[in-house]
Length: 247
Image: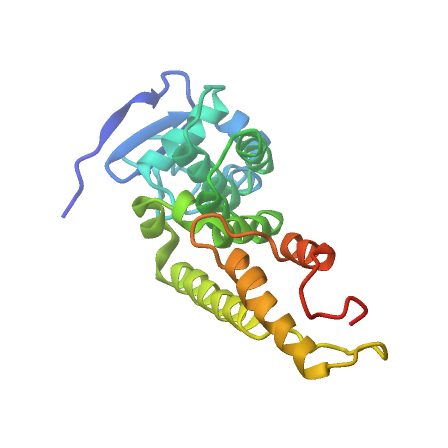
């Protein structure tokens, strides 16, 4: 069945020279200008006349048909960038990055990355965009932030965007970290008794009591847990009864 096409309300430009069809919309844009920024389009427009596809893009009934990942909405965003629009949403910059890779438009990728770097993008989106668009520098920092403060930073929509695999990895990591924290909290370090320690058993027991009642309690506090280094410093300077300070 033939799809009925229509001119795009904004991007069917009267003095354009190349006609594209995306979904049911026709776009007429400036081929020479686009070829200057896109390696793929440059090669497409350089096709010799007389070939099977050489007349494509010259008439409404012979448009250059673009298929996914190109969609009408994504192409709209890319053309907004190309014709110097401003104030792009995260969704628009995401689409620009995708089509920049597909159409080999390095300038569009550079622009989108610069815009995103200048914004307070949530850790969930930064992780997702880093994976989706091969931005390795974003991924570790975003992942660490999510692990540290996942309940604060991740909304339901972001959970859905991240996808099952990312959510699974995050929660597996959180589970392992929590297991490790519990093991640290409830297994006091073994006391290395100094020669001056005259009662090893009493010293060890007092140290374990101080660890469980001091370090573990602050380290695992449900509302304001203290970093391990902070609690350890407090234990180092505290005078713990029956614990030899040299141990």
